[in-house]
Image (cartoon, rainbow, N blue to C red):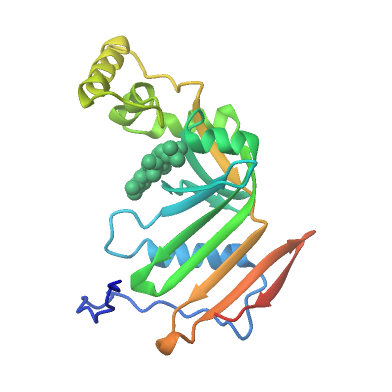
Amino acid sequence: MTFIEESARNLPPLAFTPQPMDFDHPPVDPVAECERWFAEAWRLPTPNPNAMTLATSTTRGVPSARTVLLKAFDAHGAVFFTNRESRKGEELRANPVAEVLFHWDQLGRQLRIAGAVTELDDADSDAYFATRPRDSQIGAWASDQSRPLESRETLLGRVMASIERYDGSDVPRPAHWGGYRIALDTIEFWQAHPFRIHDRVVYRRSGTNWLTTRLFP
Ligand SMILES: Cc1cc2nc3c(=O)[nH]c(=O)nc-3n(C[C@H](O)[C@H](O)[C@H](O)COP(=O)(O)O)c2cc1C
């Protein structure tokens, strides 16, 4: 077996100094701390700092993971949008729990958020859909997400058909496309340190309070 080598990479320095989290005295409010981490991640020179790995599973415990984009975040949860008839949509319907994970390598940070999942209401899904570029709106109609596709031509044909169908009018949100909100049941902050002596703290919601536990890295 050949192992992948770890090599020192010469990366350009960050254009700002991230503010360290105090793991000895974790902040009382992890939501505000998440928002602070997001604000710093948004300053990274990377195309999708809001990309997160979404893990779901079937009721039999078969896991699956994929990247989605965080589109809203507050004390009520983390929101993303997708085709609800996709594999993830089917898994979430049967087993409405999920975890999302961000890894911002340049910041040496990993953030995990897990909790119960609910569908965003139609008004919020409509409002977000209306902000999307028209091409993305057409794409939502054209893609039978997660279904077998015989050729790229088939997909392009469906794109053209959707373009023609909505020519001269607004593109409505497909009923099968919308948002999901992951409740903030647990939140884990992870900060890299030299020699793998990393910091971790997990917050667990307990009523209106948060319980914190420091974890070995
Ligand atoms: C950077 C990036 C961002 C993505 N964002 C989304 C997204 O917000 N929503 C979505 O449905 N798929 C998104 N995708 C595609 C998903 O990773 C995935 O391929 C798709 O949703 C089908 O997943 P499923 O078959 O497990 O349901 C993104 C992919 C990448 C690489």
